Image (cartoon, rainbow, N blue to C red):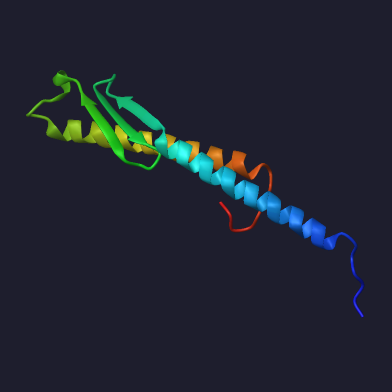
Length: 111
């Protein structure tokens, strides 16, 4: 015969409630980050790329002096660099947000 642990069901219920709250927080934070814009500029501000937290490019701004028909490769490299930095910022914000949402709760396999 197995011994019953008083309050065991209640403890399980509390854990499920905490997990549900954490999931709700994570969804809220994910939506907030996805709606946030992340900007990076390179080449002394010659190229700026803006992405949202869902990794969608919302704007690319180029200063006229960076558009050199004789050196298209440089412009391409600057755009790639600015884009990658903006994506890195978006990813970092999402990671920090998810850590905040977990509130110190550690669940294997969850972020």
